[in-house]
Image 1 (cartoon, one colour):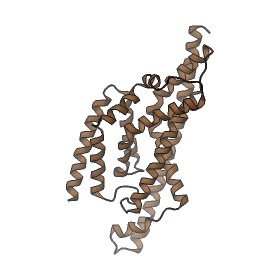
Image 2: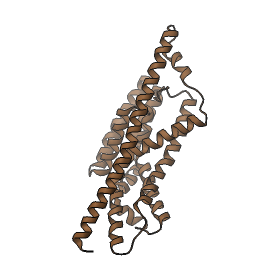
Image 3: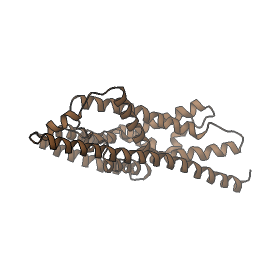
Image 4: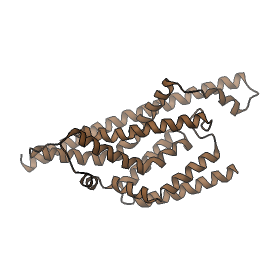
Amino acid sequence: MTDAALELVLRRDRAVVLAALGALAALAWAYILWLAAAMEADHAAKTDMSGMGMAGMDMAEMAGPSLRAWGATEFGFMFVMWAVMMVGMMLPSAAPMVLIYASVARQAQARHKPFAATAWFAGGYLLAWTIFALVATLVQWLLEHALLLTPMMVSASTALGGAILMAAGVYQWTPLKDACLSQCQSPLLFIQRHGGFRNEPWAALRLGTGHGLYCIGCCWALMALLFVGGVMNVLWITGIAILVLVEKITPAGWWIARITGAAFIGAGAWLLALAL
């Protein structure tokens, strides 16, 4: 295959991979928007009904009956919600890594030295975030069981919100954050440091999972902020997703992490002061 023909094929493959990632992210965001609107409408309807029949009760008493014990169905629903939300939030920032893998895979195939398909690598990345979604679901269950979340999945405690903000802010300044962020900012270097491109599907899956774990190490504290602003607050979700993307793909990502960390610490301190 000539260089010109190879470049044409690479462009086509990049377009296909980018379209697939875009479609998957778009479907995830469509689900997020639909679910957020449905939950808001359901909450408004319950609030109206409570107001009509219980005019003498305060808001805490009105909200209380909406919190109920989780069964397998509720847990499964919340797990799916978190998993889809992680796909929508994290795929855009993972696109550069996946595109690099796809381009090198095509070049290797043209030289008759193919390795595992891009889907295995991307699947490993999403597997890591699916595991994170399971952990997040468990944390949400614990917070709701302790009555620390409202029915709209927002922190019911000013002190808890302040503590989460301060913890997230401090983490933005830690060496662990820096180490994980550096792995996410240099896709090709990450692959070279972790065994390179392999032709076994399980190895590509493991490589993608490893990259996903580094991304979790980089972003888990930011995801915890969803419990402050609202797990289904679309503006909050969008803001965090944009912050993750900017941290990973811009040269100033390290400084952005520091600046936002300082802002989180300040906001958390203010909320803790209010809680005193």
